Length: 145
Image (cartoon, rainbow, N blue to C red; front, side, top):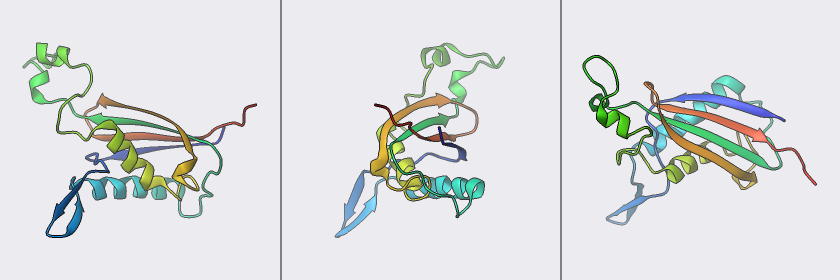
């Protein structure tokens, strides 16, 4: 199976919501473009501009990371009761999962795959990690009968 894997660092931005102000349409998230640029640059740095984009069915796996808030830790460094209650990120400050995936998927369009319409399977989740960002895996799926 053909596969690429990227580590992308930075604040994850979602795609989809828009703000309308005096006839101007703008992304609702100020992190949308910086995140898309981070994904694009991570790809180009690792695979270059001469990578032949995958054609055919694609599986996209994205593990998004947020740092745990300080309130999740005791002074000793152990998880607090608050930290124990939140094994996965569920804070309102992060973009929702589908919008984060959409922005990441759009950033890789025509770089990692010929067209994002080729993405037929998506696996995604939010996890805790000290450094915010994502692990992105793009796999060309085998033909099955």
